[in-house]
Image (cartoon, rainbow, N blue to C red; front, side, top):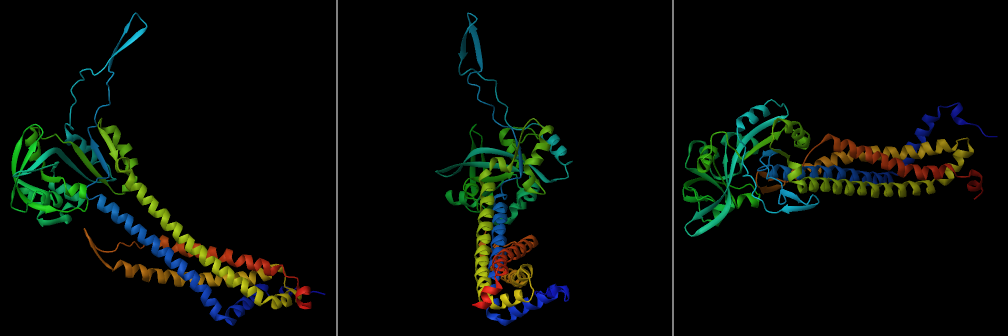
Length: 423
């Protein structure tokens, strides 16, 4: 005759005592299982924090010259078959290469658009630019590049350009109509340094002589090797344009991930092209997404490996205690009680290993965050500390240990006590 022990003694308390007894009877085995979880969770925290730091750093470096949203006058569509006429009412004759109406470059009356943009709460900063394709010349050396006329203060507000100065003062450009700041690569190509003179020529034949007042390095070779900066008013003078003329309006918003949405909201206020950074730089967005996927995949793989380790340990524990399980079932414990006993052991291992893993992951991340790594504005390896990474790591760790513990527990619950006791 079988008696159900838990009808007289709260079975939760009894099952809990048995689970704790099993855990404390083999401390080394428990520590090994905990270390599996600890390693998996700490690597999850580290990998996600590091990849997030790398993504944010790369995006920050890219945004040293790239705005979140850009407004510009786009090129007209190809209308090589612009004109056509019909002969004998049924034969169409296309006239190719017609004389197209002259294309108007740049943005007119930019002040009106900029003032409207200031009404959007999502927008952090706006700056106009006048970009000109030019030749930079020093003696016999001539380099093709881009001369950018900028509003000094707003340009720095958007791109923190002054942080990338390696020689000279960015804000001095505000007081020098004859001053120019070169990219470091461009200065090397022309063998120039601060206080030297440089000749700039446009495609229309306009030529100006400037004094170099600064050199900057943004870490983007395409920019540093070909770009220079002057005051926006001086750039307009070269092109003989009025005060409202610009070629680009650069916009930064509070959350660069919402650039596409903001661009759609801005679009109705102007007839010019409104382009979010994702549209022009899809490879940057794709690279960030790919690195995040890799980080999650590697981290989850580590957690799964840890789960297999726990499964093996719990399976060994079931095999070692098979006679005890048979005795418990003979005393009246049912399959549900056996599952609870072994599942509780697994969850305790998961929780303890998870807590230690989060602490260990934070320690590893802190050490990496302080490793010297000098590049651009960075002084150490990039690392992000986000609460969500720690929470997700702990949750995934507990789920993994739950599944890894349930399978052996279910096996234990199906033990036939009669066969085991008889041997």
